[in-house]
Image 1 (spheres, rainbow, N blue to C red):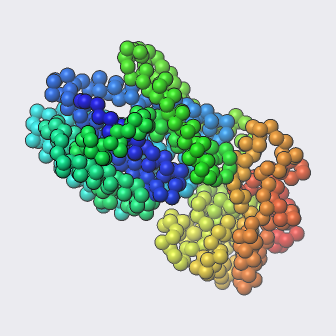
Image 2 (image 1 turned 90 degrees about the vertical axis):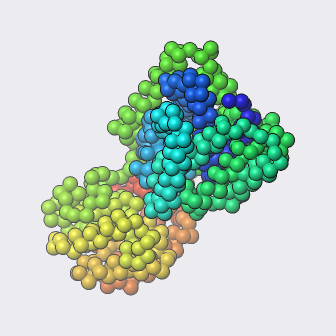
Image 3 (image 1 turned 135 degrees about the horizontal axis):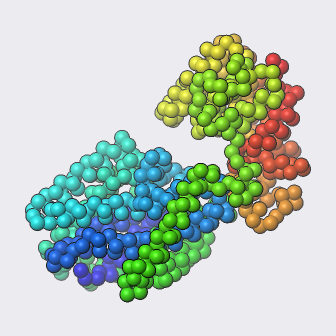
Length: 617
């Protein structure tokens, strides 16, 4: 097939849309559709290459897969290696363990499946901190590359059957996308069945052009301009709330197909995307796509505060472009050419690096992200209470209690886990039962159920039933961030829970929320560690108590005062003397492990300081 510079220009449009979306630029809220454009472009290019080889009877599956490996793996390995190396030094154990998972999944082209299994919402703020989130699209494309050539080989003898099959699959996949984007949006976003129609749109464009060469007609110039307008309009006017990949995605996909089929020399749309500098970005678009997310995420994590738009545009973007250009020049181009890197040399480079990265990723799963690589990481380990097996426990279990007849039940999310096991030190003669579930804040289980996951509603419903059914329980201890307590519905729901327990003869102790840091404390401490700053002489990770913390405390005090049998203990002054939260006390005690969770030692320290206020049982 002949080289078309405007297709590289189209790649430039797609990759810059994605980058500006991830940079959260106001006018690129629909930039995520750049990935959809890549799917159409890939479908077009791959089909064109395969069909041209089939027509001269020179197509080889082995050679095709080798070309794909040479195109994809070298640059991918370089960025994965760099991402993992940075993570090794600066990421906390849990995060580094996850990075290891993502690296392995990326190398076996299944990260889209992993993100689906882990229920990761691409548009959630938390997922923006995943440096390898963007690899889902590479995995999906590779899955398509494995299957599509086989389908073409099977159907090639009958062109009519081939066309009918591809059109049928296109509409079937589009129907799946339309249904799934509403019923199962995570599956629709990440998995091939709801995405294959976009790649097939490019494939059908390739088959059309294979039969009808590019022609120069005035109407074609207008159609290519319409295509460009549809793509740019989608980038500007779509946002995170636009269902994708549903029928709305037809707009940019149709625009991309119109441009591919009808762009012609001299036309305005063609001239826009065939400018030298635009084509240059398109040529390095693959490496640029690979580098942009790790650079953006790791810079943000290292600085601990949001970057300005100007910093992203004038500092980070040039860094991304330089990394992409160097990768394209010294990695992509040489590895594509057999004259420069032979088959044996290719295997000799790729296989060992892949094995090392996969091995590190797998070992990291069993060593909690190599937490022993730094003593600080061990001190930042999460407080698991009675153990990980107790997360989500809704019944009495010996492993989640300190005695067969517990007198104290702890109820809440991971913020309650801080204190679950440490309460046994304050009540040594009494048993403590842990009933907690990570990610499930107490409240909103009777009102606004749509705002809560069904699993959380089910957990608290069953946990309350268990507490009321155990005759040995004399006190229920509740703790949480209480982030919604300023909301009337949340307040009423929490009030209802406490009243329900009181009516069953159970007094309630509410341990107030820990003051939240405005940044990730663990990352700040890691940064401080690598800058060789003495914790006792540096207060870079200290922070003041927020107004919201004071408002939450006041609201909880009012709530417990109105209850029949409830006591509230404010943790603020114990953790943050004089309204200033310190990461280390004078004895070197580490207080936080992240933005709000206390360390194992800190939870014990806080309860000891509060001993005079704890109820007597």
